[in-house]
Image 1 (cartoon, rainbow, N blue to C red):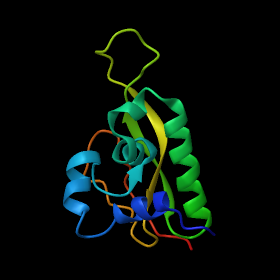
Image 2: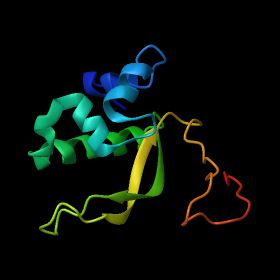
Image 3: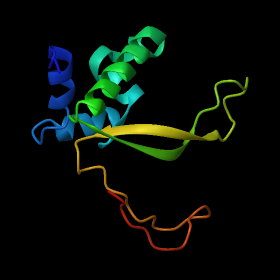
Image 4: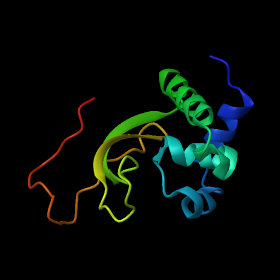
Length: 123
């Protein structure tokens, strides 16, 4: 495992000193690929697919090396295939990345799509 400067920079986003800034820029951890790419490259990453893919590969390598943990969640995202910008969006599976042991499942506080029941973490 090579810990590159890019991996060190990504890990620095999860440090308590940087948490307030990261949360204001890209949301609270765990972060998705586009959030990490935005922190690394700025707004130019949304026009350059190779930056998003490179960031995704780096995050996956960090998961493989045990530096990060990946969780898959369902989120509502903007539908870029439709011409109108007023569509409510689509539900997608999104991979989010965080420090191992800190990607906790949070009980949903309600809403129309909430599912009643208990949950447990399987190791």
